[in-house]
Amino acid sequence: MVLLNMSSCSMTKTIMALNYYNTLATLLFLLVSSYGTYAAQKQSLGASFIFGDSLVDAGNNNYLSTLSRANMTPNGIDFKASGGNPTGRFTNGRTISDIVGEELGQPNYAVPFLAPNATGKAILSGVNYASGGGGILNATGNIFVNRLGMDIQIDYFNITRKEIDKLLGKSNGRELIMKRSIFSISVGSNDFLNNYLLPLVSVGARVNQSPDAFVDEMINHFRIQLTRLYEMDARKFVVSNVGPIGCIPYQRAINQLNEDECSDLANKLAVQYNGRLKDLLAELNDNLPGANFVLANVYDLVMELITNYAKYGLRTGSSACCGFGGQSQLAGIIPCGPTSSLCSDRYKHVFWDAYHPSEAANLILAKQLLDGDNRYVSPFNVRQLSAL
Image (cartoon, rainbow, N blue to C red; front, side):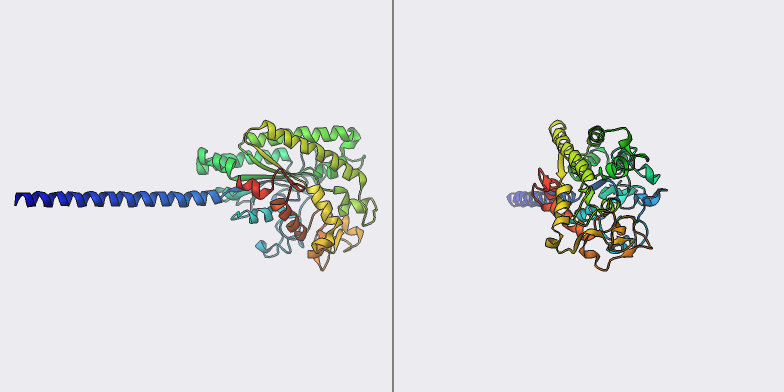
């Protein structure tokens, strides 16, 4: 009986031990599984921070007293998220940044910094600081009265950066910015179009600067701006060069050019700046540890599109869809607004208005930046940058 009791007690302890270890193993399994799910979710998230001008403005200028506005019809007529209502985007639908964000799995469009809803968890998907009329230099865009230049846009990101730390804590906030966010910058066109190339009797910098001196000033100022973003933990950059601004409807109209002609001066300035920008990004890649600067070669990409538009299923690479006079060259002078003429085949136009590409063009451009080769995006494409 004593031996039997001892054996029974031993068996009971063994069973209890087995239950304990089984329970512990189950808890560990659930813990590891939960962590794996969290890690996978965490890896899929990220933020998109967008800087620049009207090419990527998502509505910041709606909240400024400015002459550079797009919150009126027919702008946004094809923007499904708003039901075809204008949002402040300077095109008929989505911008390149909108499309890239969608393709990279962003849950929401980056909210304009000046919008009332740019607060709380909304900023964790990203923030858009771009402003129609803005440029690298602070004097750029003076003719519009108000706009956000790059210096101010970066000041605003500094505010967002602190808010992210409050929401996530400093360690998680830094991880979001450094490892899982992309900084897209499309700026420089206005520094030529609405600064240097303005008539000499106006506020243009040509009054007292040579092209070389002006480009030097742009590059030196841009170096400081990009370094500021790096110092606030930005690591993944997509920087667009200046497109063939001499070929936009506005330049063709004011210079009285034929449909197959472009302004030589404007394009030469863009090419000169673009060469210096390429060198600048290479310099920053070498000198800023952990940084990845990707160059989006918008100049060659847009030139290819407007030259060979038929290859991409488009009907014209020169006429603006929205403007005064419909498809005449006057459509390249008058801004797109409620009294404008509107083409009936806007999905067949490279240009939406005097300055900006249509959504159809933006879709083609975005695809090349996401998945294209080093002719148009280097040293790797945006999808590869996102996966780093």
